[in-house]
Length: 585
Image (cartoon, rainbow, N blue to C red):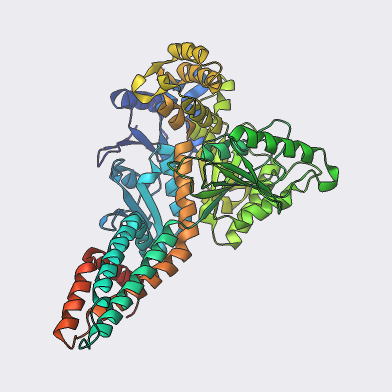
């Protein structure tokens, strides 16, 4: 078998071709034994699904211990990519997937630009990086046509908090300067009002810049979670909230859109439709109220077993990545005899980005495809297809089939291939393998104060049984985690576990990172560009004032004082933004 190794950066890879199964298995085993982090780029003609199935060979070939470590993606040799540093400096021009993999450094942020403006190629690259387990938060992805504006937005967002602090300091210093000038005696002081005018022009401009920056920072972003009935939608929503508020039930479909936002007073609030909001001190009390309302809807045929949209404020942690988001738990659209589909469509239409869940245990039902088709059509019409992300959920169910290869890549590639054959336009969609239940059980145990699963403890799976029994009452989610850990031990050869192990195995961190990125990118793009252009306009007003010719020494001194108060780094950054955006003086 022909293969090639590359160590150009942190990621190491070998190429695989369509050689004999025995030869492939031997090379993969030898490679993983020498370096468990090595990845593979497949340049053969089969699908990855078929490749992995053949390698497994009904348990006679590559066993599940190796399959768990076997990270593989497709080769592609007609790419046109630029690989850049995160500040936009070009490092390399690449034409193949293997060249990109060899260039990647998992510890260094980068930007990947599709020079041919081919959105399908960009989606293809992201999917391959998911297969390889590359941390997507380390990369940003652009089409060449979007790159200039996208880079400006990206750089500005990374510095927005710093810029706001600069503005706050400048406003304070200019206000002190204005107070000094305004306290001067007017008699015999002809330059006083001219100096006050200069200060006010600059001060007003910085007030406006500060307001625009704060608007950018606090811009509301809406992420919807959509799925057919019982695909694990509400569990995924609870993962985003890091709290069990979205009801997950084997009997009841979600009868409305539940709109979740973090409260400002650390209390819980519930508003049903246009009714007055009700307050709750605990999540348990709020959850019980929601459950009672769901049960009433389930028995109310006159309303189509539906409820008005429900607005829920929760007392979550500000450290949660999604604490500033509005999360939409959409109505299940396919419950017979209900009006749920209308509510679901309304939520999907209004969101900035959406995660659509496919149930792994059902392998793409007709109803799932029909619902996905309607969302896909709507997102295409709204020009936000890049903000639609697919999650193949309940991947933990695969352990129920002990005679099949336990490979997340194989499962996702099967769905990707099936989707592409159903509708060619689906090929641009990105699919993440996840187990929302695994992630949420880990979150619940961690919140219950079970410290034995902290990363530094390296708990053996045998000891996890003891921990589960010790926390039987306060952390019931440990029972599920223990069962799952035994599957990880049996099929994947994992001997020690922690919260980090469970969360990474769940695939949720990768999905949440990319969903947040997609939502922010879509929600803020047009708003940000408009805000940045207005910020640049204010910067030109400031520059014009500071560069005017003073008529007297006192005016000149005042302009110098203003100039000293103005942060040069901030002004240089704003001028750079103006140059990139093509703003005119």
